Length: 327
Image 1 (cartoon, rainbow, N blue to C red):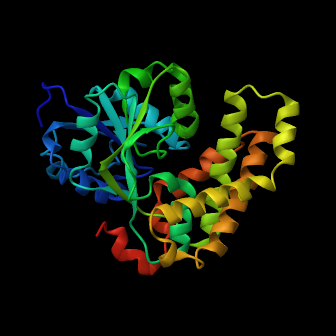
Image 2 (cartoon, rainbow, N blue to C red):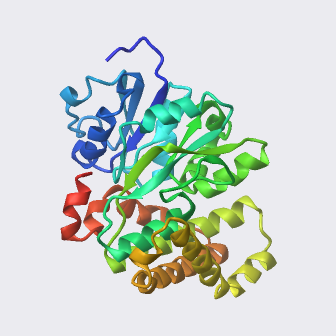
């Protein structure tokens, strides 16, 4: 590891406990074509208890560890990594997402243009489950492969690389922005920045595939989004009430959009109509969470979602194990 050269991109990875949890994604990062130009920033509760395998870090340009204490918010942990990073471009690598070898190189190349953020396309790492497909399309519909590159109004949450200087402009608000990146993308565009989807940057995403876990994850994600949207927009009590009253429309509108994305991806014949039962339940759960966020704020949704975000393999079926290995 060379500590004197400036890396082209910093990659932040968060573990709620130790290195074992992020070992698979670290293997994918070691397979990157530009691994010697990457800085790895690991955010963990404790450096002493991390148990990092130093031999697995030798191919990267630089590695550093950020001690964050108990991880109670992914947004706060990611923001801590962004602040510690030193590269002009910074990306987040989820512990349950496995980037292709050309992922980092494609993101770095795209950032030579004046994009504020460059997003990845998303593939399914556990495609044998209809709940997994429901989760993938409800969360990442427009970005599910194959997806055309070009300027976009938004990108897949937690799957974009940003110009670090732009993120640092948010100061103490960065934690909230990284928790709900849909709000971040809207705000970036409002500030005159532009977003780009890069098809050459692809990552395989491990999705929740247990029904109750899927519904809980969607609820907490919806509550975080609703609370962030109302807070960022400085919604009045009346406007919050209007959106709460419109709850039955939310899953219907989203269902129409998701079905459109399933057809766009060419998978209608493979997943329809089997995907519909879990998809409808997931969209309804997200809508309940969303209006709860409008009405009562985020509550403990950030803390509750940490478990699904940082220990994803606990919420997939046993027979999804082959996909969990990133195969």
